[in-house]
Image 1 (spheres, rainbow, N blue to C red):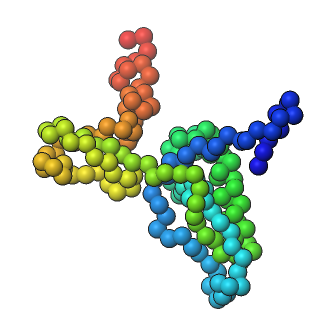
Image 2 (cartoon, one colour):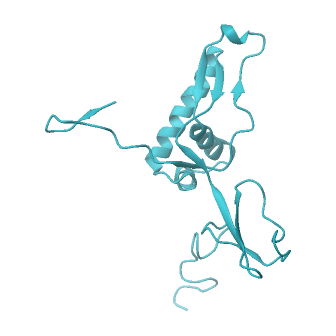
Length: 168
């Protein structure tokens, strides 16, 4: 696809930003029962479209939170989600197979550091928090990637300060 700018010159579109997904899908194909595969049309759902569906419809996140998790703008998240819902509806209503593959994505990783031995390692989202350091066995480990779970000053803030009232 090419774009023409106001001067009439042809330019290439900007490359897609890499979207963050928590995990790869467990399965990559769904089809209606009782219909041979060779007789079916297919709809291809990109992995980042599946991630948008998961965040919005399964995890019940609003679009701003989903966009933050995928490292895209809110309008981009809304567009990805809309396209995903159209594709899934097309497959369900019209009896098509749904293949999940491709897209501009990378699996997001969490970074942990051991306070005892300074070893750092990464783990994908959805695998749980490690109990101890693999190198030294210490339980004194912490997240280093800037992502936090739950409320706190680094993510949602406490406004006037934790436990303080206005004017106090």
